[in-house]
Length: 123
Image (spheres, rainbow, N blue to C red):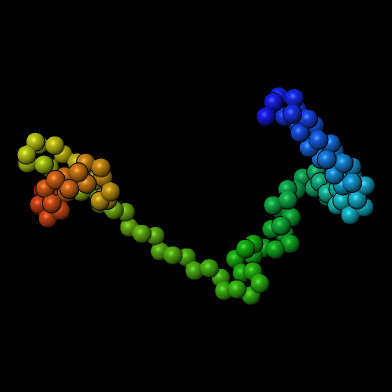
């Protein structure tokens, strides 16, 4: 697409968006919402409250028990994985990992087999 054609296409898009913006500006529902938001923010500023404060006043339970749904049960935290240390007896290389997704460990398992590599686990 030439620069001129690109320019004209963008110009048409801009004109369509400007027309849509004008229709929104004349929408009475939008005017009422803007007026409400302005008055609300002025009122919040007057009393030094934030929107979060108002939500906490109106709904002290927050999101804990909405629409009759049972309150969310806290899951117990998983215990941290322990660090495993593998020492390759062929070259003396040491790998410390908390999981089995270690690049070097995977390469060793592909080369020597999973059972043999697990036997390299240092105690």
